Image (spheres, rainbow, N blue to C red):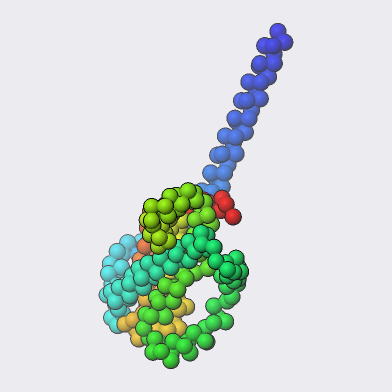
Length: 295
């Protein structure tokens, strides 16, 4: 009788623990869904406003859904007079792709050097790289602007692309270095015994094994370059050379009353970021997690 009673109590404890875990699981999902709805509300408002008529934008109280769904706002805004959205899209894609290539190559190469190659002052140089994260961009703006003006880079894409080929960013170097330190040393030693050099080891061993963290760096870089307003604003002056961020701001300044068209163009600019994030989110999260396993 005593043993049966103990078994019954044990099953009761297990049932209570499972019900508690289920409650916490359901509550956490409800909380995350509610939070996601709050963060998605501005995107939803942007989308519905882009489909409204001009008169519906200023109604009070505001309507969440348009009375007439004007899908023509998207082509009308894209082909608006004195706007160069086709050119701006091409400029943005070109700059984004070139910067992503430069960041992935240069930051991974620097990270490999800090993670695997022993040279005098390696740790001091790495600390200096990390310290550069604390340096605001406004501090180096005037010296960079003067330097680019002297070599004739103003109003070109060179200031936005070429500098990333010399390091790729301190945060990216740090993230990749942490991941590279988790790769077994035996793989590198075996490649050295087979006659492989440092560049070949980096290209054929480290980069293929680092796809998750490379995906994370690529997504972060894409998001930063695609949304970059500060850099193009400083270094570009010709409207045909603008990026989408500058172009939409120019559209807003010249035709501020065309709210539905402006919202339509802003929504189109957001779509690529959402698309890229959903494609690479698993690799990106996995890369960030694996990079923090070993210091």
